[in-house]
Structures are given as C-alpha cells and as structure tokens.
Image 1 (cartoon, rainbow, N blue to C red):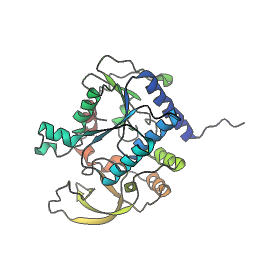
Image 2: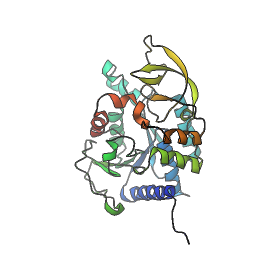
Image 3: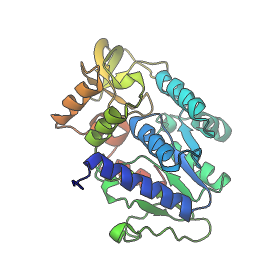
Image 4: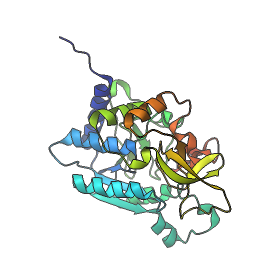
Length: 297
C-alpha cells in the first residue's frame, strides 16, 4: 500500500487544520478577501474545511476605491454564489470623513491600514485570516502563522510565539488580535498548481489581454481614471497581473499566457518575484516592514 501524499494534498491539509484551529481558538474571526488568487484559494479551503456547513467567518474586503472593475465583479459574483457575509471597508469613505485629500494620501495603499484597524475594532475581530505567503516578500517570511498584534494593531516581529510541532498559541490580552496566514508555506507556483487541480475560477486580468498602459518608474501601470497620465506615452500591450492590488500601484507583466498551464510555465522560469512590479513596495527598502509594523495585512 502506498502512503505517500501529494505535496498539494499536504499543503491543503495543513491549511484546513489551521482554519479549524482558528474556529476553535477565537470567538469572532474574519477572512480578508481581495479578489486575488490567494484569497480565492483561501475561500475554497475554508469551504472545504467546514463543508457542508457555511464558512463560519465574516468576509472583509478593504476597498481602496481604485480597483480593477473585473475584480469587483468577480468578488460580488463569488460572494453571491457561496452566500457569504461580506463587509466592505471603504478607503474612499475614510478619506472623505477625515478630509485627507492632500497629496500625501494619493497612494491609498497605506490608507488601508487605519481602515482595517478601524474595522477590526468596530467588529471586535480577534483573528483576521489573510492570504499572505512567506515566499512573496522577505518581511512576510518573518511572519508566524498565528501572528500576534498588540492593542494598537501593530506587529512586532521580536514578540511572536514559537510554533513547534504545528502547535498554535492564540492566547491574547483584551484588545489584542491575531493575523492568521494558512498559506504561509505555499509558493506562487503551488497556488497556481492548486488552482489548476481544483479548477478554480479567477479574474480574467490574470490572463494575457490587450490593455492600455503607461510606464511609471520602470513599471507598466494600467491606464485608468484614477491616474494622472501627465503627458505620459500610452502603449497598448498584451499584459496580465501576477498579483492584484490597487489599480494605481499594481504593475502589469507583458505576457502571452492565456491558460493556467501557460501561467505555470511562465512563472516557473521567471527570475523575478510576483511583487517585483508592485509600485507600493518600492517606496523604500523597508517599505513592507514599515507598513506591517503599523498594522498592514
């Protein structure tokens, strides 16, 4: 008898175990959803973990207001199909309420931090499940699977709990919470192989398509009503997304990949990580760590 388990089955089993641990250890959890491939896989895993019951977590989307229309359409369709409870936290509303219209807030990515922390406090969330993976970025590699946050929602990488033998410590003081990362041990290639195996639907912008783009700091950015082109030359190219965020900071990759198999082939030979074209990561060398310490995803 062969007891060997496929590596995707191992990753799936680990993630499902973590999701069930969250349900057991915490009282009011949410699953953060962006409409991207990782959060789609996370929803699928949560569905498997608790089937035939409904996913027991609230779904939270921190919406910058500057989105790819295809992603919002996909999000709403998936929420309806699975009958999930979606909370949309609006950065646009935060800007208007707090009158933060000056130039330093052009990049709405950083404004997701106070909006997320506001929702966590308002909804009394004690565990926020995210799709972050350690292979994405060097700071994400520091994260524990159960990542502790203090009463201000801040992360201190030097004040985390050991996670030996898959034992996860969710103990916390009043007002503190955890970020949970069930996909920590997955890679970008694992995600796409799993999507292929499970035949999951993803937004069409992950596949090659013609789009008007402009070159900004050596990154191709999608032309949109949210960007001041400022006389920039507009190109029409075959591009796709490898990671999805705010349309103003998400870099587009030149590509001819129109199937998941072609995407897998493309990234398997790429020497650049998927976040290599995220403009918000290039603000400074420690850009991601600075944001995470303040409460970013």
